[in-house]
Length: 510
Ligand SMILES: Cc1cc2nc3c(=O)[nH]c(=O)nc-3n(C[C@H](O)[C@H](O)[C@H](O)COP(=O)(O)OP(=O)(O)OC[C@H]3O[C@@H](n4cnc5c(N)ncnc54)[C@H](O)[C@@H]3O)c2cc1C
Image 1 (cartoon, rainbow, N blue to C red):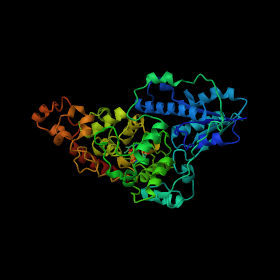
Image 2: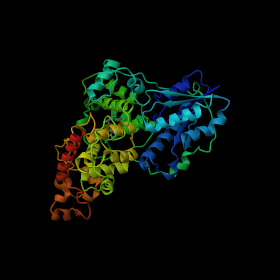
Image 3: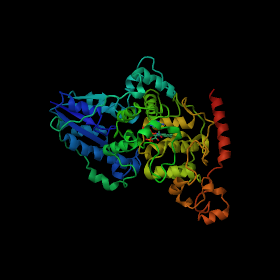
Image 4: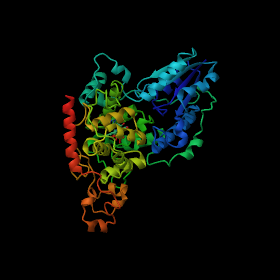
């Protein structure tokens, strides 16, 4: 008799889930045991790697998964907290009569790779009843392991490389509809579940009171499908005209929470939404008429995502600023806690940066061009801090936090990677209506919402409020330096100095 343990990690969904489908369809499997493991520190309401909003989102995803597994497949998701090896050891004895196969998603993230290696070493290799099976293409379209190990593979540097790769693999890729693995099993066909006991088991009801309130984005596969329908499947013109660099960074008019882009990233990074399902929805719309193409289209965004997964799976030290072939070692300044803290808490005195960071702190999400603005500001733009400090803060706080993408994009924005934008193209953190950060400047609704101290400021001064005459500050009820901070640096001077330092650093590397 065989038990398949389905270990849910980054694919918290029923639809198009190769691991779950295999377990439910394989003739050799008699029982299916779905599991999810939280970090031990979940009892503190946030963990080392997950800030409160990220954890809340993850929690909602797990709860939704548990309900879907029960309703659709009559399977009980066993939820644990603790070290993954200890969790598996704790149920090992109860599974003694069976052959056990641990089913896992392939991952490029070091934390997950280390966990898998530990289990392999301490459990799989020592217990002949246990085996493990890893599944590719759960989080990506490409089989990342196969591509990076194929002869002639070179790390992609640009969208051109990605288009070439996709064309070679899939031909007319922009119209392709990938075969998805939609498990629409009726309960009678599904496998029998199994129940185990463990001191590491936890109930979601124990954790719920420790968590923050649900944010604007609610986690879970059901929410993911609803958002996909609302923003993509039912919006043919939106998909056909999607042009990422032209999208507004300050969210939609009238709703300072709602992204101008799809807002699907939290669902994709937790795997509540299969990336193939998003791809296919776009292909089906695009097939019938003219449409934008990579790099600006939605397919283009997915290609960037695939590119970073390839890089994260093939570049040593992908998350380091040293010993990383994709990172020039710039001599960044000493870590300045005060500067970093002002940036992190949205108190820099630069309203666009502060509004974006406060949005992150409240919702766990920020538009791509907002991320451009704040990451450029922290690194080569104004504060001259190492990109890894910002990366760490994003990793904890973003509800779409993804190791491969977060590192890739920070490398890009810090100007240190072969695929980076030129380091001397620095965003003005006090943008006007022509800025490529695409900020709504006429009413400045976004700034007024996220930086309420400035809500009565005239739009003319709202992006650089310290320049407003005192009389205007008084009538707006906000004195700069008292009610809202003065800029923590002189933006022009710091820009000039940092450009010189970057150039000098590059020269030393030659
Ligand atoms: C400094 C920095 C850090 C970032 N960290 C993350 C992260 O941890 N997780 C994350 O998902 N994205 C990250 N991004 C990429 C990007 O900002 C988000 O994916 C995007 O803003 C999500 O919004 P959306 O779903 O509306 O995107 P859309 O424009 O609607 O794109 C659709 C999907 O394509 C993918 N995508 C879009 N842009 C990118 C990109 N530049 N790189 C890779 N994939 C992309 C996402 O899965 C996204 O959901 C980061 C960007 C920057 C500049």
